[in-house]
Length: 491
Image (cartoon, rainbow, N blue to C red; front, side):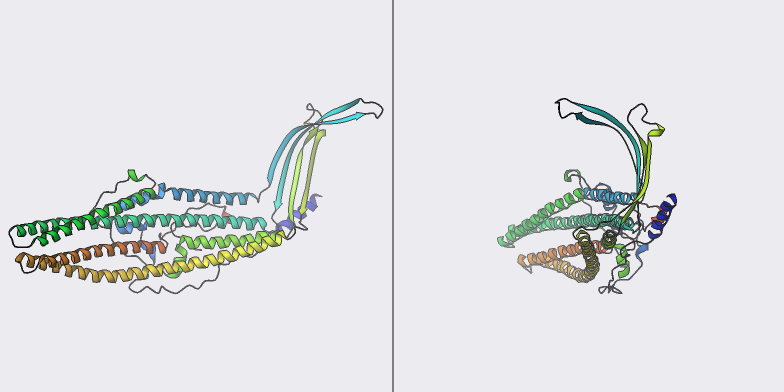
């Protein structure tokens, strides 16, 4: 009998070398050779652009660096995603545990009662007996058809997808914080512009009042100067609530109440960075959302194997040993010992179509994840193209706007000199001042748009340029590429 068990075990191990179901192959994609909107940009290997993947350091702002560091450890949405990641890691360990035998033990006492009597009398008696049991049971399911391996493959792919989801969320939150901070600094510069303009308009109002008192200009000039001053003061006040809301958003992102964060006004604007643009093939290796989508394809592919394995019999080996006696005193005694050992082959003969339905569902789920992966890739290319053309056009627009601003400043200087000389009326001065102010604000708005577009392009390119390990480390025989938490590992 021992030889038959050994032969059965050897056969199962030989059969276990193959796994039912399709082996994973990456879905076919049409990857462009280069980006369409690459004009004016230099293709480069981005690995040298930044150290430690802290892409926000490109903006050269120490306070921004500190805020992002705080977000990385204190953001609550990030904490929830990290907990979900740990759940997926635990599922991998649970799937791997199915490869090993399970061992259980039990101990108990059972009371049995059996009645006895005669048909001619109403009296009866009962006999009470006790049974004491102590047993140790072992069960081992042999993975002949690869069902357990496919299940582990699915769990591991889900775990890696969860790690990529965590990286994608972190990148999204970092990009949101950086955009809010950059817009806040642009508002600070606009506030300085309006405050300086209000001071200039106040001096202009004083000059006009002096000229009116001297009988040089009419009362209408004073009214126009006062209107212009108050209108600009209102614009300056309007910026305060916008800045406050950006500050509140940053506070929530770093995990503190808005009342506890105070970002001081500063005169220096962040630097508009030079961003190395990856080749399309590198984009697929960086973006965590693309990596997560592909790993879900891997998980769905493995689930097909699990569904197909349900058509084949399950083989398990069970063993038990223990003691069973009728009295507690001689319970654990050699004559009361028992044991059993044997294989069990289980096959579902009829299930009303449940297995075929599950297989059909698994195949459809795989097709769904393939389509979602391809759509994620298309969206990633579109986003990069969008931000490339946006940055390129905004740069051209900024050059023209700078020329317009210089012309407006020169026109304002000339018209103010003419007004002091009495050769033009005040209405002409007001129009030129309004034009100059609009050009100043347009120039700052363009800078804000370029800064925002640069952040969006960095996020579209996957953010971090170096791979960092955030992984569950499997045994050497099952070691897989580490999931990337800053961009992605190669799908």
